[in-house]
Image 1 (cartoon, rainbow over the protein chains, first blue to last red):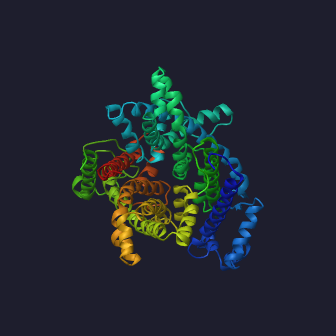
Image 2 (image 1 turned 120 degrees about the horizontal axis):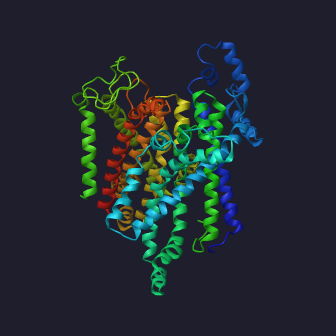
Image 3 (image 1 turned 90 degrees about the vertical axis):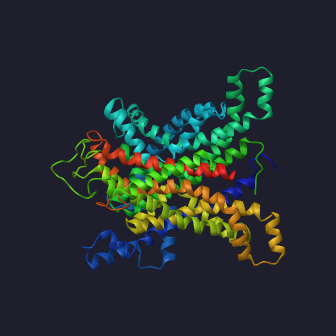
Length: 317
Length: 263
């Protein structure tokens, strides 16, 4: 059974997804109980009276057995209740609803820049294996992987916003044009995080593909070098490149949390960090959950697309 | 030994040497404030200038390296040991131990690395101890994946089959026969993992969740320097250069090792 999205494969994949999501909720629920001592005491601070702590403990149901508390937590989640922010005095679901599009827009801009950087670099290296250009491109992942994402943000801010003054230094603006303008530097930073990973995998995939019979055949048919590279070779490297991106998604997405903070973008990464700053527990718990769901869903999408698009993929394990 | 490996080791030796000899290379104490000379530019007395409290940036950079390198290397040890052991068990025994370990792994990898580390450190309270726990809780998965994959291949090979046929106990096959043969991949990965771990420590420091001020740490220095980015950029950017150079050295060692071992 090769290369078809069978109902059985999709069902199996969804069952696995359901299990992971359940496990993720156990983990985010457990976070609250990692807090040493009584979470209510931690939140209220050392000056709270015993009565206040007891009241909040009852309010949160902290006096009940753990399994009962967990069931209550999952029940709330199923009703779309992600908790209430103590700091903003607002439902967390609404806060995330406002912030998530900003994060997704930043990631989309980053993906565009990342592709625009990685593809030419990988082509340059793979067509000149062992030559100086190849060595130079191979140094990109080595230097790039060690760069703190927020530091790359500093450098870009310094150059484009503070020295050249061509782009805004932070914030998100109020019009779609301003949104897009303020996403350029964060997007470039996201690209700087993804490019090392992408260049490395694209180069290897291209090297493999360029030795393939169909490339030799295309060259023998007298097609131009550019056409062979772009239409034949590059197309066939997209599937492995996308799956490498999906595997590294957790790492790459994590790197974007801090980027929003550097540029003052009101996305879920910044929401998470303000939640941490204000010890706003429901925000930390729910944003962590949303990040995990994002990874799980994008991976599901990548798997299904992979299975549907590549006829060589054999489904099932 | 490849040229990349040699260059990486040399670079790391220079960095480690500079950090270890910090008292000799820096004329000032990293905590010594000089409120009459805050945010000063580079001078003979202060090669990189001074920070917002008049402390010598060069001295703080060197002393901070001690914290970041030490935590980065030490924090990788526990995930390496735990992750590799779980990978050996899962790969060798298969069945329910494998299923159980891999299902837990599925859940951990569902979280973006930094998000889970940040959330765990937040829950446990900022500080070095929490960093170790968080990185161990999140970092073991890569080693388990790598070692399990290697074991699945190796256990079909002659030397493991022979050891089994000879009736050796499972622990002996695992420790004496399989482990030495399957761990090289994990060791190579550990090099890039140290880079990721140092980045995590620096990121936590930047967020105020890591090494607590006034102790010098690269991430915390960058956080302190961020407000002065437009007037005194060295404050926020110099520690990043130190991180990048350290990361480059470790990546070169990893790549060189991989090439040398033919991986």
